[in-house]
Length: 184
Image 1 (spheres, rainbow, N blue to C red):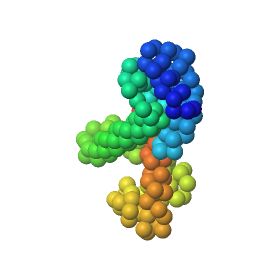
Image 2: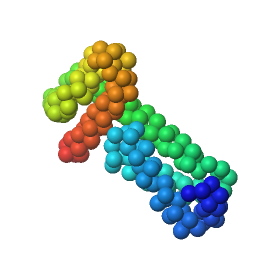
Image 3: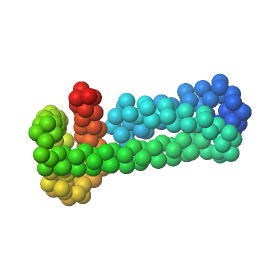
């Protein structure tokens, strides 16, 4: 899409033109989805993020008339969305780990049983991952090594280590969520 055509579409969208919005959506959505999937390694989460981004654009459509380079604007929004996602994931993992640690110290047999089941599920899930991903996850979470240390020891790039950890955490998050839903 040429810049002038894109500018016209943005002005039309800002005025509430649904067809112009659909045109932008169908033009950018596949690239955006590939971009997000490349960062999150999770197609479902990436689809949700893309949907949320376009919904946000529609809700704030009046601002679009002032955007000069929509592609840059959209992908910058996507980047910040992914950063927020990983921040929330890290916080979630931190609280899960704290809960597991505290529950082991708890006097309640029921809580201790719950924690053992959850830890067993996490261990089984990690063992079912590819050998490389499992090894990287264990080095990070059990041995406390940094991504750089893992990359050096395994002769991998930092990005490869990050990708394996991101995917492992996404898998574990889904498994833990399903476990918790089944317990309710």
